Image 1: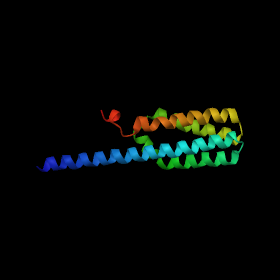
Image 2: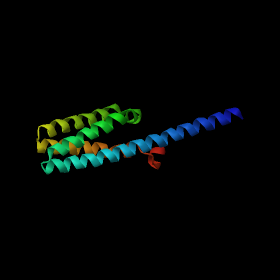
Image 3: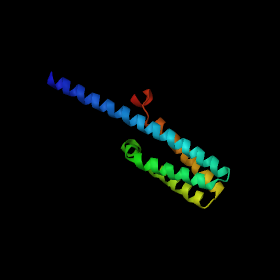
Image 4: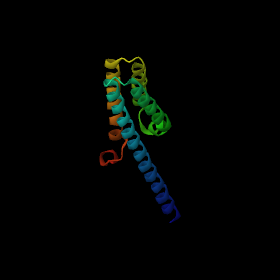
Length: 126
């Protein structure tokens, strides 16, 4: 009976961790996607200061939650995301609109994939 209770407790802890992880990753993705879209719009409107501030806020959010991302996201995907973000920031600082829009669009697409890969859904559970 004690083993059964221990297994149930361990299972409950694992399920709680999965739920917490999924919520954190999905919220991070949504926040970053919104900021990225705002940076894109600001750059197109030639408001580079706002675009750069949005990129810096994205970096801050990403750096605070990257440990959660590293738990389940493939290292190659993490590297792609971080490279696209770094290049987006570089092009924003240089005010290179075509290069910036290319890299921020790539970054947005990579961020959009995270909830599909890591979020809690029936497909991932099966």
